[in-house]
Structure formats: structure tokens, C-alpha cells
Image (cartoon, rainbow over all chains, first blue to last red; front, side):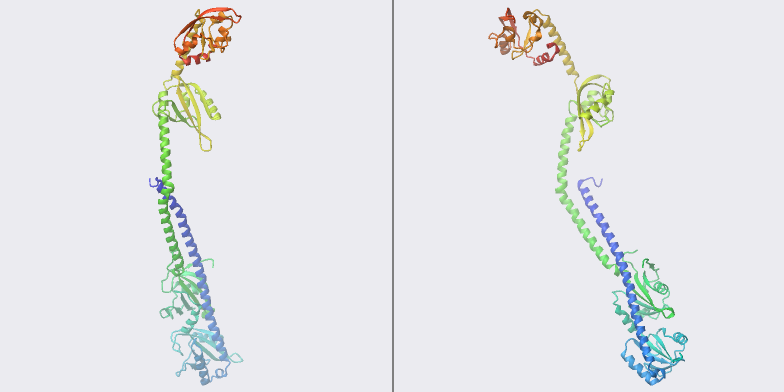
Length: 254
Length: 316
């Protein structure tokens, strides 16, 4: 027999004492792991909310800027030189914008910064059509080459109305996506973290890191994108945009 | 659930609504989340491994000093004691048997087996009742023994060949550490020869007594302190008194009415020389009348006979 000698039984006794300790270590490890996981999920959700708040603040600031501009007579009167000069001054003083433009109700640009000489129209843009219809602020889709700035941009259109509610002018601010990304990254992302901002069509607007690989691409086939579009808010375990299409595991109790 | 995981943990939220809504997500690799836990686990396992190795090494070396050696010594001493005890029991002349509390034999030494005519091991698992000539008595004996803790008596036993023989049986209980009886031990001595000797002696004594009583001499038996042990009827007749009145009294007072040992006492000389001695003397009855007598003294060298005669009813 293996444990017949006194010494062997003594060794067995020591091992029997060690086994529960081993079990405790494993149990504690699993507990800590699960707790760390829940905390991490809580943290990423909080970071996402912080990033979205920064984005909202940017939109709000843009709206305030456009509102202020809308009170200036040169934009109401479609004074092209004065408007362009105001835009040029403003562009120098701000960092979050790739350009500004003022557009007639038919979509033709009459002033802009950077200044353009050739005629440009936004009449074909869905966001412009929505704005013209609703007479309210509209956010455009991702544009890889902005018509004014030539840079990847997302535009925000603001309607300038007369006393009767007729559309006089549309003021446009083009968000500089690189600047916007820098703003959003103020949330102090942890090492190896990723930040994704997508529009409602599943197009990647911002991506950190490696924006060049993802920005502008529609990734509706990615499970995380599908989840973001359908569930709106939450925290999940999943596979990254570059990591294939493994199904997400949804965690209850959030 | 893979430890560390290959996926990412995502938090996501939506800004705005409708077609202009945008969605923000932050993801971190699960592996990074669990890196600290993995490090902690690795550290704990390493520590446990070290502690385990130390504990095993410690148990190996200190166990030798603190436990194994003392226990081994204790085992050796115990083995030696058991060996001595076993040899003593196995080699005992008397039969020794151990039974459980129901009287089932769990051990019988060779002497026991020989005494009862059984082969080696044949008595095991059998009831002690098969050894008693009166099996119904066994329960009574066991009850009495359990009540008092021990029991001694001469009983009649029966051998395998149905021969009945007398034994001196000593029973006692074996108790556990708490004093509860857990077994019974019996020591059996075959007293067949002793019984035969006693019977022969009694027969011899009867013959002697018959001789003493019927002879036409006065006979008395005196111990070394000059106390009369017995006298025969003739002597009682000579001195006109019942012979029981002589017993225990000094011979010099009874026969010569002296206060001390007679100077011519033939008994003193017989005991001193170990040879018979005779004197002529004048004895005195209680009424003062004299009796002339030739007294022969014979020394006796058989103390058991004296003892037997002292205890024998016929000595009265």
C-alpha cells in the first residue's frame, strides 16, 4: 500500500492540509476575477458615458456658436464677404472645427472658411433636406472629404429663420473629427482600451487607436456594432472590431 | 469562461435619437482586466508551492524527530511487551482463554487446547458453554463475574471427548480505557491430580485415624509448641475426660499438671534428634490420681499432615 508507513501518512496529512488552502486560493482568485470583471464593465460603461458627454458638449458648444452667428446681420442678409471674414476669424480661434459655411435656402454656399471660389451646394445632402423640412438643427453623416474643408468631417447645420419662420440661411459647422477624437480622449482611456464612435448607420466616425483602419467604414456585421445600435446603452463582453464576429455574451444584472 | 479571456469588455451609450443618434463605446481587453488577478494568483500559487515544499520537508525531517522516532520506539516497546506477554500466555502451563462479552472464545492458548483435547484454533468462535459440564451454569457464572469483575471457583469441566474433570477457574473482565468491560479472560488450572492427591491423603488419614483409634495405646499428637492437636479415645478413657478437651492445651499441663515443659519430655528429645525417644513417667489425672506410663515420642516430618489433621473434621 502507498500510505502504510508512518512517514507517508504524515506527508499525506500535510498534503491534506494544503489542498483546502489551494482550494481557497482558487476560490478567492475566481471571486476577485469576477469582481474585477464587474468593476471593469462598470468602468467601461462609465467611460463611454463620459465620452458621450464630451461629444454632447461639443455639439452643444457648436449649437451655441451657430446660434450666436445666427444673430449677426451678415448671415441674415447673406453678406458674403462679411460672413466669410467672420468665419475665417472664428476658424482661427477654434480647434474643433474643420470649417464653417453659410448656405442659402436652396443649398448654395455664399460664405465659408476655408474660403472657396467654386460654387458648392449642399442641397443633395440628406441632412440638409431634413433641416429644410423640419427647420431645426440637423447633424450630417460622416463625410470622408468635406466639401468645404476637404477633410473627414461631420457637419452640423443650424437654420436661421425670419420672424415668420421662413428659412433665411443655414449655418454649417464642420466638426474636425481628429480634434473631436482628441477631445473625447480626455476621458483618460486605460492602456489597451479602444474608443469607437459610430453613427446610426453603423459607420465608424471615430476610432482610437488605429483610426485609419476603421474610420468611415460601415461595420454592421460586427456584433458589438449591432449591439450598440439595438441596445443603446449597457456593458457587455464581446470581440473587438478587428477580432472577428464571435457572439457577444450578455451580462444580466446591469 | 476562459481565464483572462480573449475578448473585450465594452461599455456603450447613445447620444441623441433617431437617424442623427451616435453611439459611443469604450472597450478594454479582458486579459488586461484580469492581469492583476493572474499575477496575484501566480504569486499565491508560488507562495503555496513554497509553503507546501517547506511543510513537506519540515514534516519529513521534524516528523522523524518529533513523531516517527518516538512512535517507532513506542511501537518497538509495545511489540516487545506484547511478545513477552504472548510468549508467557502461549507458554503458560495453565489454560488461558479470552472471550467476548457473549462468551464466544476469541483466544485460547495451547495449554487450554491441550487441556480440553482440542486442536489448534478449534476453540475459536465457539461458546465457552461447550467447556462446562453444566452449560446452563455458564450464564450464571458470567453474570456474577460481570457484576463483581472477577470470579473464582472449582468447577467441573468437560473435554472434547466428554471426559469430565475438575478445574480451578479464575475469571476476570478486560476493560477499555473508560472502564467498560469489553472481554473476559479465564485462567483454568487442571486440578485432577491435586484432587486425586487429596483423596489419597484423606484415605491415608482415615487409615491412620482408624489405626490410632483402635490401638490399645494412648496416642496424642503434639505440635512443636507442646500444644495437643489430637488424642485418641484410649487416652481420654485413661484420663477420664472427653478427648476434645485436650485439643489446644499444653501437654505438660494436661498429662503431668506441670507449669512448664517436663524436664524428661521425650517429645523435646525426639524433635531435637529426629529420632524416637521413650521415658517412663508418672502422669496425673485431673482428680490427682496417678497413672504410670511408658511414653514413646516419634517425630513427624510431614507438615501437610499436621495441617490436614488440624483442618480435618475428625481432628475434633
